[in-house]
Length: 231
Image 1 (tube, rainbow, N blue to C red):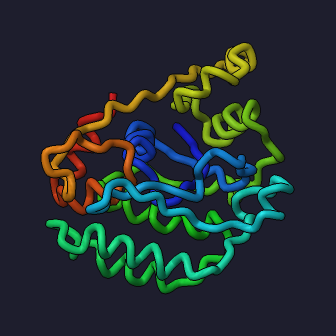
Image 2: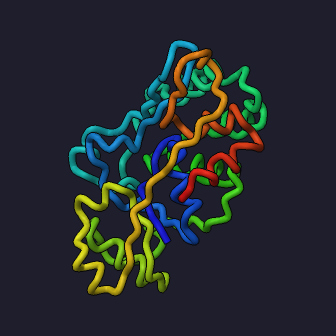
């Protein structure tokens, strides 16, 4: 199994991690760090990469509230982001496949950061043909956890003995704790695929964009490109 915080318009590696697990938990009770980028991601425009950021309540961020309690500031960001996506991908080969979902998504009011992130994660996972079940940590009835105890708690809850963690987990995990719980923790490393991109011209391929970039440019081939990069 695996887990990660909900993120806005996630990059391909996020869905690669979902594809590599038989169960994926959205850690919506995690506090947000000031530089972890969960509320922003990048698309490719005719003028180069453009970062789209969801504005958050500064008080909620400073007080380290969990993602499902961090309020979104309604400053017109939904209108700006939808316009940016239309401008960037309106002529992409497969934009029309995703237009209706995105148009509806950006008309809806999202009160908290997790409410912003989860619908797009669920939509993109389905668009990539991923069958991995998605669960929210807030719905599991677990006691409070931190980044050391969350893996043992989740594995115990679902009877898992193996956990797929991000590569940065190597820097902070208590490996002795994992061993005491009888857990094997694998580090996930994503091999980013290359594919045809709008606006790129003869320039070098631009990686680590929102997964929407692959879906817009490659349509039905996107699933194979994503899964082919999961080791």
